[in-house]
Image (cartoon, rainbow, N blue to C red; front, side, top):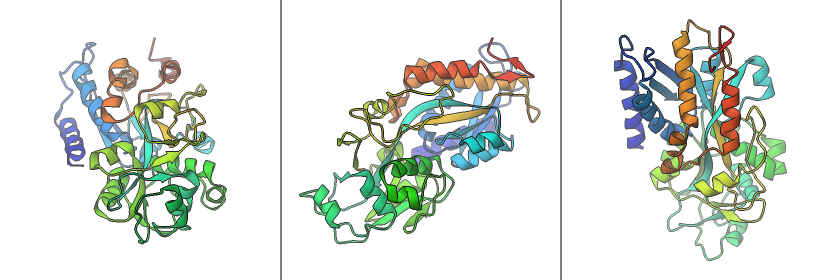
Length: 353
């Protein structure tokens, strides 16, 4: 947690201190300061990639991890160069906010993390996870949990679910999965960046949820995998469509993306039927306007924004994903994204020639 906060502060300070005047990037144009906001889920990856991009390209990027919902609102209000979101825009949101482009940046996993004394391994099914977060399974030694985990000493203690208080793409991914595996969840709660969880404790951002679980016994919560790794919090293996109990890894996350990807890359890969797939896997996206001339932005800003996205899609940047516990994009996602970037314009003229 401290390292993540320090990295964010370093980026913010760098953004504040760098003056573009007189500085040139590697292509000879004036170096730019870019700003984005949104998902906390990919923040550890973005911290590294943005720093690398600055070293390689000369442009500086400041990013605020305020949750996917807040990031999309900032883009809608046209006060940022890009938003980060773990949830692709719905058809309704696309109608309200026309002419945007989704660029997947990496793949990751939402893990079901927990804090139980003496329990290092836990198996869960999707339906059981749904019943826990719906408040229908209330005790850790519930018969269904005990049957699924023979030999594990589960305490006779109430379960404390932990969920996001802010509008969150992580919540969207988690509830998207629960809706697919639990008819009860689908009918009562559904999918959303914000959901009315019936019981438990709320926390802001992936760091907040991870922090509460780390500090509070008998909790269970959903969190981006990197935050569970960083906090050294145990997380459950989840049963996939094939009946396999799977832990998240670069390999099991990548397996979830083995199906077709639509041209605009807006798709869900939760509950994949692929062998070895971790069932709560997801893409995370950066979203930009197709027409880049807005809010007095310069053409150089627009070019720098596309340079950033092209860098994230590069082999160099994708190679970083596994180092920080994410997974690289499949070749098809990168190919579609490069095609979509060619549609981005400034004053109606394509930026990528």
